[in-house]
Image 1 (tube, rainbow, N blue to C red):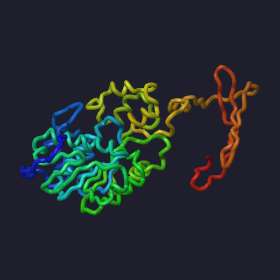
Image 2 (image 1 turned 90 degrees about the vertical axis):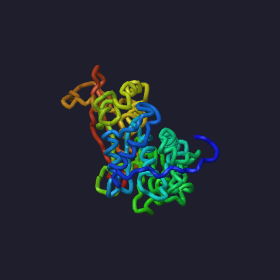
Image 3 (image 1 turned 90 degrees about the horizontal axis):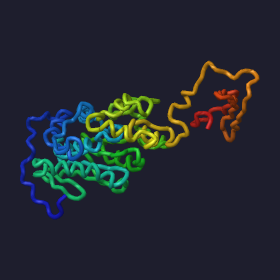
Image 4 (image 1 turned 180 degrees about the vertical axis):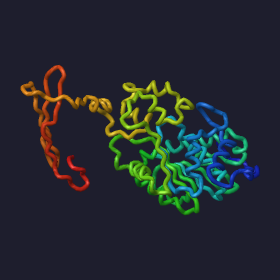
Length: 354
């Protein structure tokens, strides 16, 4: 971005008279006409939203608009590019006087990824460059005093804003305080949208804001909340390329299949591959067995015969734990059976054994 004073903006407003007055169709047309892909596949060409991207744009821009939205999607599917394009539409095309498009992430560096992408899109289109002043930390459209800005993930930094569009990048590492500060800032306008785009989190974040929003979205009972989840079927093998296609809408388009093959376990940990490549929630980051391996050992018709040589293992209880007694053979094909299980009464909020 060029340093120094910015010249006066003398260009007239963008001529959008023949566009639909509102909704996803207007946003898609704006993006196709004014947004240039800044890097990667299709760089320096006009952005052409794919059908799955159009579905997201339509869902968040059609009337009645949701107030909040969450898109959970694996890495590499162009979420930053789509978010930047929507941000520019919110700045210039949404018929909003004094628009405030805010981007917030876990830290300012992450938030600036979308901002920098949007700034480059402005520089690559002369019509946008003639109407938008590009500063180090924000984009300004002087005619309507509309601003596009990246902000640090600090509740204090979010005070005083009145966003027309707030974008939360990588929600899984954003704290409750930050997200709630964004929620509190939104809603002062007739139309405002708080849009989060993220990959699933690491294991152990079942009490995170993203977990709560995913559960809320899966219930599908809140018209003010839009939820879209791209994820492979539960229990699929990591090398199941049909499952890759379910999780990654950009696969074989601008996400390359050989790139996924190149990161298959053991080069990437299985839990990480499932999060980043398959869009799945994982129970733990490291495991002594691959996912599904223990279940595959089941032998329903087999039992331990009388007189077999066995070992017995006891897992004793402590503080509302379970106690389990198991028996295993010591032959060439070991077989394990549960002999007895003692479970503590279920306490409220514990789900039984701990």
